[in-house]
Image (cartoon, rainbow, N blue to C red; front, side, top):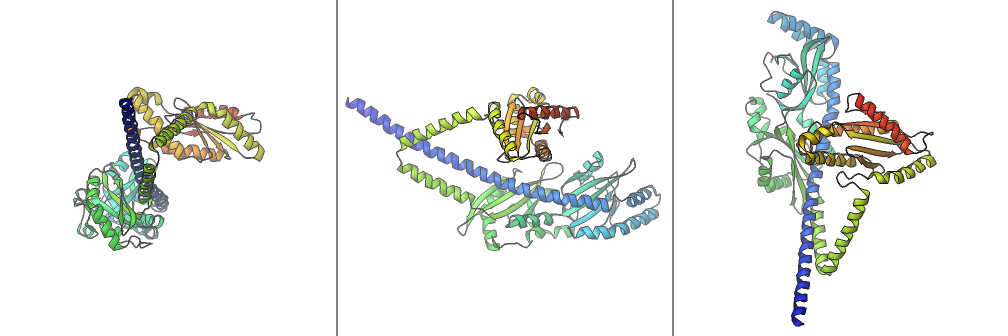
Amino acid sequence: MDRRKKKTKTLFFSLLFLGFALSFFVLFLSYRTRLETARMESIEQMQSAVSSTIEVYGRLAEMAFDETAHRPEIRELYRKAQGSLGPGERAYWRGAIARRLEPTFRKFAYYQFRLLNLVQPDGTVFLRMHDPDRYGDNVLPASRLQAAALSNRMPARGFEAGVTHNLYRYSFPLFLGNIFLGSAEFGLSSSAVLAQLKKQFPGHYTLLLRKDILDPLLDKAAREKLAPSPLSERFYEDIQVRDLPDPMSDPDPATQAFILEKVKHQAAASMDTGNSFTLFTQANGRPYSASFLRIPNPGGLPFGYIVAINWNPKAQDLQQLALTVGILMAGLFLVFAAFLRQGIRNHEKLIEEALYDSLTGGLKQGRFDSVAAREVSMAQRFGMPLSLVIFDLDHFKHVNDHFGHLKGDAVLRATGATVSRNIRRVDYFFRWGGDEFLIVLPNTNLDGALCAAEKIRALMENLNPDGVEGISISAGVAQMNENDPDLRAVMKRADEALYRAKEKGRNNVSA
């Protein structure tokens, strides 16, 4: 009997210790996961801000193009210049074009557009507005962006270094009728992008650029605008960006230097991978994040990093939360806590399995009728519009056949995550079956539903889950009207619109 009691006691304490260790292990994993999520959110926030800034300036570049090189009289003169025989005649036309472009070029210089180049189809520079005496050289060996723009005869954009400037460049094709004249290239100062970031998210920003890419290109004037990076000997630091005025003094210069020295070794190792990353640290008792956003050049290779040092309490809050919970757990009856936690997890798992698709996170089809009845009742009672979007993945069978079902699952999982992140809390996202999905949009008219569907369609084009490229969707949109008895009637019209979208060639939205 004593031996049995001893065995029971040993088993009990073993289970108690195991539960205690397991609880802290789970807490540690949760902390690491949340910390990694916080890092990803920091990068995503920065990427979103950069993308929106570049998009705004892209519209300005389009305006500049329309008001300069795209003007009919400029294209006529450019055509005459290309058809001229002697250098003297070409110089005459070059001067005539430059004089006509000068007022507008100066106007857009206010928005920090530093260059306007006219490049001929073979890559030879006809005119540099910022330096009219430099022309006749071929930019193709040094410019992947211009090589792509001239080859495809389509607009191109990207961050690229030049002989005198580090710029974000926008290139537009030039045609006169059916004659391809070359391209017009606009260069946006890198400091313009970083200045906008500082306004949105105050902190210290700098631009790091790879030495091995810049060294073959730089002239003396350009070298004077760069300094060796304190983080890695493989990178230059753009002095103009580094010395931009800070809207706020946090972190101050001394704190900036301390943080950079503190993260130096870890940052140098991470930069060697060419990926974006975020490091959390502390200085003077305050939490900071050092985010490194990868800048690809037009060829897709890492060209450098935008570095941001911001006050960020999230990591410290996560650490304090984990420590507090750990101390509390140590004082509780561990076996009871472990059983209770397991019970809650099982209960949540049952609810999750009953209501949601485990792969995409969308609601199951069985939930549609109850959701539809409630939303139709609300729409009719309060006179609000109610719309519906149906979409599916284009050629998804090809993904499964060509890449395998594991890759197909990765595409479905990425689709669910993309939709869930980009719809409102009041919207309902369903996995209808296979690669078909449905979104119910309360208090949304047809135009709003078309915008929502188009946003998701555009986001899907940029997905690359598990290396699968070329993802697209076709979507059908419909709005409920007074004659519809229920939401399934609206679904039928949306389904018909989906087929029209496919008939148009897929990767589009139809109503």
